[in-house]
Image (cartoon, rainbow, N blue to C red; front, top):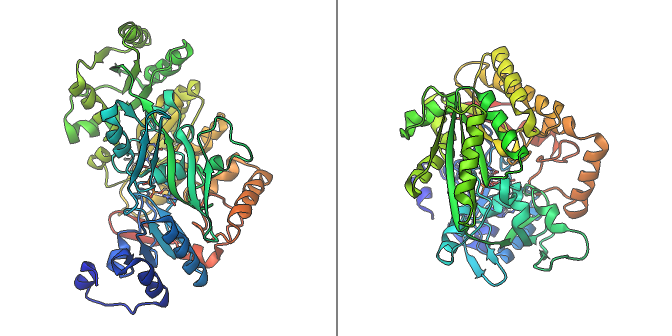
Length: 493
Ligand SMILES: Cc1cc2nc3c(=O)[nH]c(=O)nc-3n(C[C@H](O)[C@H](O)[C@H](O)COP(=O)(O)OP(=O)(O)OC[C@H]3O[C@@H](n4cnc5c(N)ncnc54)[C@H](O)[C@@H]3O)c2cc1C
């Protein structure tokens, strides 16, 4: 009996599926009481649905058996990393068995000579770089959630992060995968050869949001830490000046390791929460980092500072030591959490635009905010043209969630209209399903569905996610979808 079973006032009858799973994994690794399941109902978005069972396996072999049990009982399988996703990709809208990777956190090996590490999917992103630090190596993709999110979730979402401007996203750092398919077969895909023969199935699994198979081991590329790093904060009176600076810098041939932007609304939230010393009256700040060999880095830093001033920065601060650098990054990496100072809820979008269009799009976005009478706090991976407008709202206010969703939809449409896309890194999940047709024709979507059908034809793996059409999860499953908003309002659609 688990501790939570002892606390739970109402004992549920044990289903045959639970009994089989308990025999396979031991009772402590199978959660099925409502109180336990509720914890697994959320990700970082506003979606919510409860799985029927949560399992905590330790090996690929166990996962293979779990899938066979799920098939016998016609239950969906939903893989879950750390639950930090922002688009409802782990929301179990058809119920079923959720596979959580909290017990699969081993780093199997670090191979400096071949510059690889073999890790399990539940390993937290930052823990990889922490384990590599004594050797002066690191794992480059660094989502702002890196202290919490898992490598398995990163691979399934092809996650990005501030330093992906220079180093590339997760797809550029994954060499091989062990996966369990929906028939229980365990496969190894990819490897260290410069040119793997045959179809690139590793690429197909990266960004597949748990719909093709369960990832059980990941061979990642590791890199030596740069010899030197310089970090600047450029302060602007207008967001237009800041966004023109971004394309100006890159257009001049300089690719910093990161160019991040936060707007005035976000600055004020961060200051209220953490008191870092950001200028409260600024309309935007850019956080720019360069790294590389020591030789020449100070000149590069000066050049960037000059650029920022040319484009209208009223002040450029340079981090003088590691502590000051950490403080500047804290401003960026804690920005989403700090928004709680401004409103009980936010709805985050993840559109991408050609970076030269940033000034226009941010201006248009203002007009959308006015039209829907909403406040937007902007946090951008600006160098990549990746917008994160956070539309603030209070879910207790009737109709508020509907209004922010409409505003969010218009922002995504705007991104597509200027040649961009609907997601830079968070994925499609449930939230972007309706926007896929903005980007793809039916024939494009059909081609993607054929790939899914070739690898996972029964679609018990994370049903109703990523592809809008023919998801075979059924209207019944869709009608089970609750939209729960933090603040205890639950709206069933
Ligand atoms: C404050 C904050 C900041 C963020 N910043 C960034 C950012 O800078 N860049 C960015 O890209 N994202 C960011 N995110 C979003 C999120 O952290 C990433 O999408 C992350 O990769 C999700 O990892 P996770 O372990 O939480 O996965 P989950 O949310 O648990 O799952 C994500 C997807 O992966 C699938 N999955 C998980 N594990 C496996 C597995 N082993 N096999 C198959 N499928 C699996 C799930 O089914 C789901 O489809 C941020 C989120 C927050 C809350």
